[in-house]
Image (cartoon, rainbow, N blue to C red):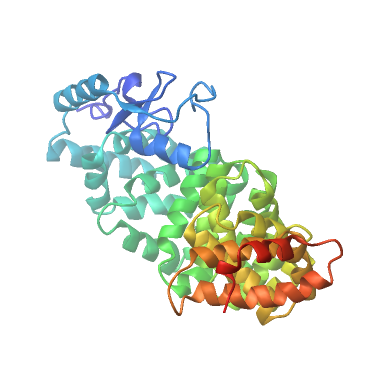
Amino acid sequence: MGRDELCITVPSLFHCPISLDVMNSPVSLCTGVSYDRSSIQHWLDSGHDTCPATMQVLSSKDFVPNLTLRRLINLWTSSNSSPSTAEFEEKVMAWIEEINNAKPERCLDSIVEFASRGEVNRSLLASFDGFLETIVGVLGINGMQIRVLESVVRILSLILLENGVKEKLHKLILKSSSNSSCLPSFISILRNGSLESKIACFTVLESVTSNNESKRFIAGVENNFLPVIIHLIKIDNDIQELHDVVLSFLIAVSVTRSIKSQLVQLGIVEVLSNMMSSKNAAISVVEKSLKILSIVCSCADGQSALSGDQKCAGAIVERLMKVSKTATEDAMVVLWSMCCLFRDEKVVEKVARSNGVTKVLLVMQSEVGEGNCVRRMCGDLIKVLRRGCKNVGGFSGAVSYETKTTHIMPC
């Protein structure tokens, strides 16, 4: 049997322009371009208002199921069903042999294509004895071409959700005697890889940080990983999809005081402040930015950075009740911690100048129920901010608002 017999060519029309996978649920935008439902939904939820393929501004973000295309894909899938077990085993053994003979670049593209063609193929690869170990082993080879490393990470991200893969990857990447040799490959991708491979990189790494030990290992100073990440979001400062996965990863690993302090020293507060101040920031990015700020404000370095940043407090106030309930709660944690718990006069003044009393009163009005934690924080904040307002010249918003809406004043 020829080595390419299992690699069936997929019609380009069946590929989602975003994920490049065969579409499971094709839907069409107003521009006429079809995408897989999950991919285009993620694109729109990230704050985009353009068609990814044409970059036209969307007159409507609604999409309709493309039933004709779905029927064609189903017909094609049924006529190109998965190979027999014997054929599959022969093919994978050939791939493993090529990789072990230090020729991974010749077969990795074929593996990516095979894994992209459906859940059945991904499940077969993930369960094949020795396949995952062989693929991860490529990450430990010094001097490997960036294109090869990108293919490996792409494969891992494709089979990540298959049964038992996360647990195996955790052991292979973090628990083996050569675990330290894998991280330089990930760093190389983050420095020199494509946007797609960088996103896949974070997806894989976040999945293997299942406990505090692994989080401390990846984020450890000796691995030089966090500086690379912060530099990445500083230079790629307007790529929302990348920001989203980076912030998710940082939330996952920020479990110790030393990691929080390291993030602050690398400038995370300024980075997040700039993100939240951007009009183009996706909702999910703002939400995760506020979550990280609520995490780092618990350490002394974080408090100092928040106090010294000129825009952060104002940006937090501006986002109150404009993102999500979770984001508002995290924002209140930061403001309450800085103004009430640590009594930082600089932050109190910045919040007061940003019409903070009015915003906090609105948050308080939206929080109902006795013993509500956010409502109690609002009450504490209003008391502190009123005193701060007296020291802020020309500020009268709180007084006029208070006299008009006494029904929402704290007891």
